Image (cartoon, rainbow, N blue to C red; front, side, top):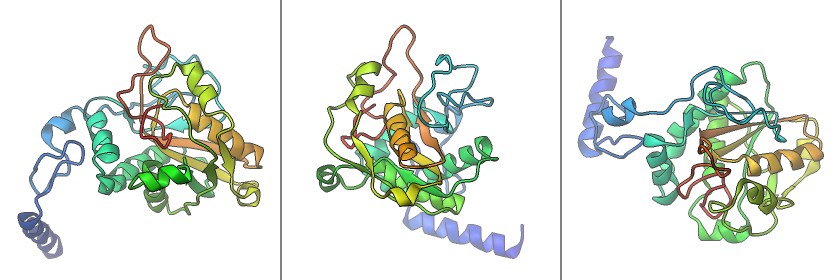
Length: 258
C-alpha cells in the first residue's frame, strides 16, 4: 500500500470515528473499510446473466414468455427481495435520499454489462404530478436517474410529465395496472426526444406497466429507442397474476407499488 493510500485509509477511519459508517442496505453500523454488512452481503439477490431483456429477470428465473412491452429492453442489478427490499424501503419511505448514489452506481453497472453496445443520448425518469412533488420530499426515480446519468457521464433531463393522479397500484391486478396508467404521461417537448436513444430509470419494475407507458409516449414523440434500467425487479408470484410487492414498486408518485 502506498503512502497516499495509507493516508486515505487513516482519514477514512478518523471520519468514521465521528460519523460511523452504516450498511447501505440495512443501516447497521459497520467497520470503516466496508459499505455493506456481512448479513446483507450474503443475501444480496443479484440477477445473474444471461438476462431476459423482456422482463429483466435472469433467464433461469424468467416466466414472462417474452411478452413484448413498449421499451426495447430492461435490466436491473437485483431482485426486489431480502436485503434489497429493506434497502428500497429505507430509501423511499424513511427519506434516505443519500442512498440514491450507491443504488445508481449498481444501476449504471447493470447498464454497462447488459447494454454495452447501445449508445444513449440522455437519461430520464418517471415524473411526479405537481401535487405529488409538493407532498413528497423527493422523487426516487428522479434521484436515481440523475445519479445514474453522472455514473454513465450522460445528461439527465425531465422529458416527461404526469398529467393527473392515478389510483394506488399495489393492490391492482396486472391488467388493471396497465389501464390505470394509460394516457397518464406526456412528453414535455417533442423536439427534445426526436431521434434520441433514451435510458429510462426507475427504482423497481413489477409488471412494467409504467415503464412501458412512458416508453410508448417517448417513441410516439420521435425517440429512436427507449431502454429501461431499474434498481430491482420483482419476481412474479407462482400462480398469481400480480407481482410480489410490499408497498413499493414502479414510481407512481404515491410511493406505492406498480
